[in-house]
Image 1 (tube, one colour):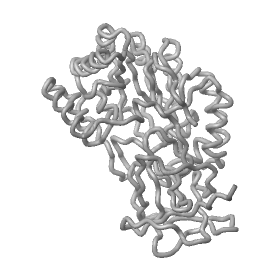
Image 2 (image 1 turned 60 degrees about the vertical axis):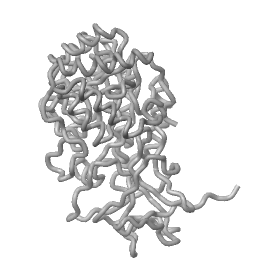
Image 3 (image 1 turned 135 degrees about the vertical axis):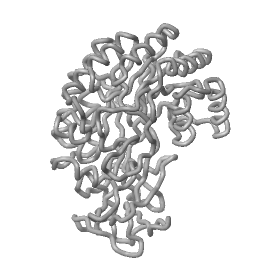
Image 4 (image 1 turned 90 degrees about the vertical axis):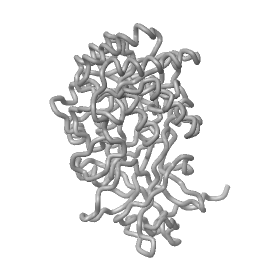
Length: 429
């Protein structure tokens, strides 16, 4: 068997021209603040986007040397990949950021390299659930469905918000609400009780543009029921039980509207007894969640960056709650019989440190979490790291996945929430 070709750095001249670093350079990625070799990689997945990192300096390693250094020449900018849904990042792009550089937009920047003319990424497949990873309808077909629901519900503010999300921001959950299939979105809240560093709908101090601006006003219970009911009826007509979810990327925290959502849940559960009524939440208000589970919410996904209070607070910048409330919310969901998923916002060099790994395993086991979703945290890597405390080196995201699977054999690793009656799917490979 011939030896695999070496991984070489990919660079950009800033005008869209991408070249391979000269011979003698070896590609490295970044874990936390440290440049490290690629340990696992795969060909650039279909649907990925390549982009250069402006005002940054690319790092590489000279063959035979152990230390990373700045790559000089005519093409000095580092290149990164933004992965499609269903993949998890293992390494950040290795680069230096001058103090004068602007903050990068909110993307999940992933290390890339060239291997004998092929673009490789430091990533792993995390899920292959076909309702999310299969083919989508054409733009014209989607627009026709959007117009149809707009005509049917012309004054509904949920429809107005989802129209923007589906057509302008390509939100798959919003698109589902018009297509009558899979998980349909029910955005509920214009307010939030956290100020997350990586929030995609509202940024307060990073200077980064928000890719999906937050909904301006909160809808009424009647508006939410109208949209949820039509989605579930269409799903049932197609032979599915159907699924709707509160808590989308375009909104704040749905638990802040628990009184309205109890009315919505009660109404939808009465009309659609077999449906999955799901909530994506920061888990800040366990008593509010208790009321929703009692009303008929039967699936809950709680997002966390870390179960460690100082890291949790540094990222979420919560108002009026701490990690203990988040843990209590998970216990409430489990005790009430709801499907419990944790959405772990992963970041190489943070999520995979030995202390984080131990705490994550212990917490997931204690909470009896059914599925762990591994999501790459979006944001400028070095800007995010500058807001966090110093941490010990990570063991590697690939090793993290191996450890989770070995030590928590009943835990499903994936990327997408399933309906309550659905199977586990492929999981991470």
